[in-house]
Image (tube, rainbow, N blue to C red; front, side, top):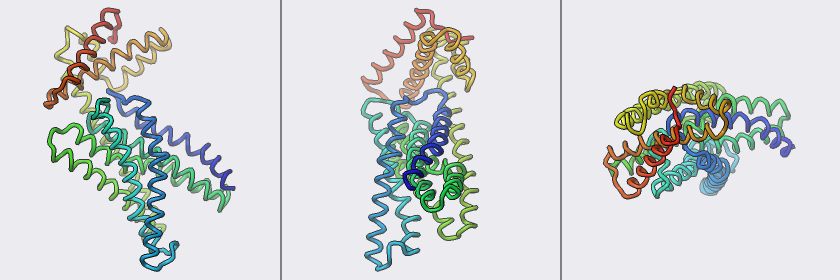
Length: 341
């Protein structure tokens, strides 16, 4: 029965979680993160964070049981596991995934530029965790209560609360993103720690409401989750507006040279450029779409390189990357690749 529940979970949970992940990725309008790195982050959450968090929490509950003499299924031990161990260890292992992405970026990949990138990677890791955890939970519920129990738990966990882990780990990612952008050593140390503490606190509050207050707490948990999810997307929106301002400010100095004013106007739109790119794909084919998209991303990346210089960052690697991007845009212009109306 459990195996059948896993198959049902894969069929029902996976499409919804993937939809959430695409929605979060869609919010990254101007400098979208590479798909391969986003998939790696998702897999970290789905495999390593789930295994590490689950095993660590189980070991912690066993130790607490031995130390107190209470059975491992004792309500007190279960409450301790849900409100202390699970938040600490699950957010810890998810946070390791964020730290790995930030570390790889710092060593030369340079795909982790600021708060928006951090929130995106954290959210994607959280959704990977959601995928595995929800499948296991609904499969267990199917084995215990049949299809009715499966549908009920799926609706609560994946439909109503499917973005919970996304918002928790986005706090950790936000902390790492603030650290990546800052030149202040104190901020670089404190911001990731603060983000992790916020993630653990939100997770503990989320688990604690139904644990200590039963059905009423569960209803309150759902309402609080919806508020947090709305605030999460408001935050993403504010960070996207911030990124747009960076693109406009840094590329304005390139007008008349690398970029035409009408190109900048289109590059700095929130959604219009995406629709135009799709229209190019269907009307002119993949090659035209790819060349246009490549020039667009090179210009945006150049803007963020210039912004990093504005913040005081220096180095040969930065010089080489800026030179490469300028050359790519110049050659695209020479081939007549046009992003304007």
